[in-house]
Length: 283
Image (cartoon, rainbow, N blue to C red; front, side, top):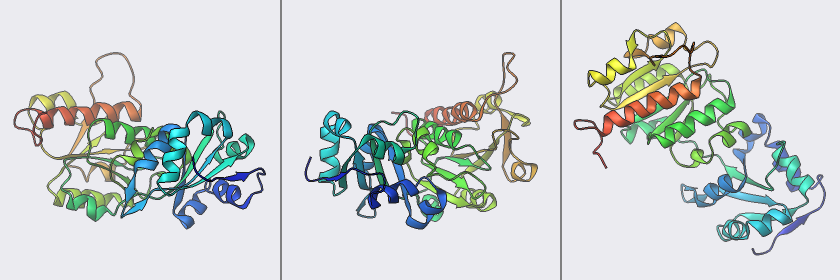
């Protein structure tokens, strides 16, 4: 595992600095965030950006360090400062009901929006006015699973590095480019200028997703805008899109929640893009 500092008190300066990252203001000031659990830590160990390792520090209980010795060793080998800590110290940093014994301190990893456009993305999820961190993280996970090229969080959406969002992403935060704080109008204009068709997902949309698929209109580069959990997309945001599309409800359910609707829309685009004539070659 390599050398490690023994932290025996919650008042340790290193533990206190990590604990402060549960607050958005401190995350923004330090440009660091917390990643909890073996899966997130493993992804952080493997991730690098601009030549720098993403994982800076790792706090581990003795029991977790023994159980995940290979992961703790990999973190140390990657240059992270590894601290063995009392379970109460790690629990105080993680601030979860059932802490997993491993918490990493990571560098911010969002990308400039201009860089995402320059890469000519073919499938993008835009989160506009999404306020629930669990939903934001879950949509990011769905986008990753569907093979999206990027995720964009507008300036009216939740903090990407909220611990609940990081946990809900289940490691996908480290897999694909993410831009944050982009005004929705700027996002739409930029994507349209990059040749991407922009669709707003809304239960009251005048286009039906099945009909769009049947008409072979889904195979090109596409960005989906997903709105607030409670009230969807405001009229001014819907007006920016090339089309407003609803997911058809064939049963008696009143609606779909945000993450479910996002998964349906993103997978519909992913399949159409890989079909003959789509913008991606089938595998």
